[in-house]
Length: 407
View 1 (spheres, rainbow, N blue to C red):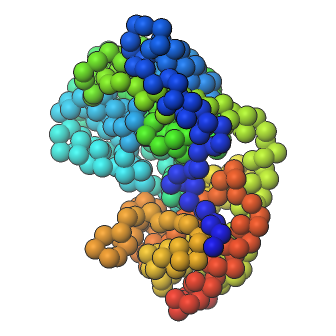
View 2: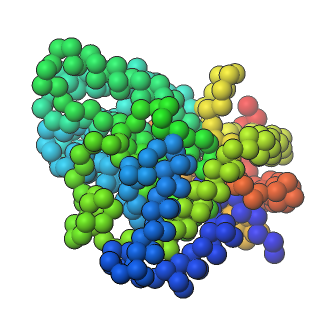
View 3: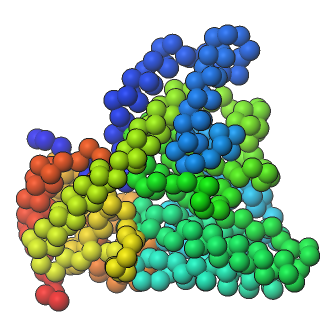
């Protein structure tokens, strides 16, 4: 049975060049990169070259890149390292974030102050609401730092947030507070960009963020390696102690092979993003597949932001489709038996799939959220694979006895 892999938002297949680079590193560059001898410094040199590659991918300086074990650690470092368990601090975020932000935010709310932003149609955050939240907090609690943490693109629906406008909203709040409060709190913006990196061009010279999270395995790098961009001059308390590694921001011997692989993946991603024709072709591939699915399964629904007619508000690779009246878990199991890999927004618990908290926060009705699955294509996805999926998915849905309203 041929595999049709439509779960690229969960993880991507490591590129051949990445696999070769990792193998070479494991065989030839296994010395400790902190050792002063030549063997160790050979590994160190390769790590720094990888750091430069990752920095180039997002348009920043290598010294602003800190390698971590992945997106989850980077997100936690951004939150804990900035707020440092300060009971006077405030975290401003939303209910549609990845659990690597949502859960730390809930935990921090027991110590400090967590503010949840309202979520608009299709999972979009209105930038003025960010300014309002910062200003309201300044009036009620001006003693501690404020961290705004927003995901650039949602991992479940592909919704792209207006990050540049949100960054402007944060800056507007900074200026307004500065006019009235000489001893103003520090205000930072953290962006979880795990789903954007490698899919859309990112240039931090064009958008003002203080910290940005990357995860290597989302753009054809090995798992277990990620990075956190930290703006020059920003003080952040390291959370892993025990060594001066990673510019004294994260202790522990570096994952040399993983970092080298991430550097190669960053170079490949940059080449891909430089070719707009590839992105346009893949977008068209997704759109045709989506339209065919909707036609093949009447009553199915796409969970997505509304089309504003000017710019795309959704990642080119993501489809979140609902089959009301069904359970996502049953659909996914049926697809898996036929060789189609897909996923949903929540993990299985006690034999049932809870509706995605992201979809519920977007205002998706619970019966629709229960029957929603995510299909995410990648750079390697072909029309032939989607043709196979287009035969299997409607068949699985029909076999599960789909009963849906016609509207």
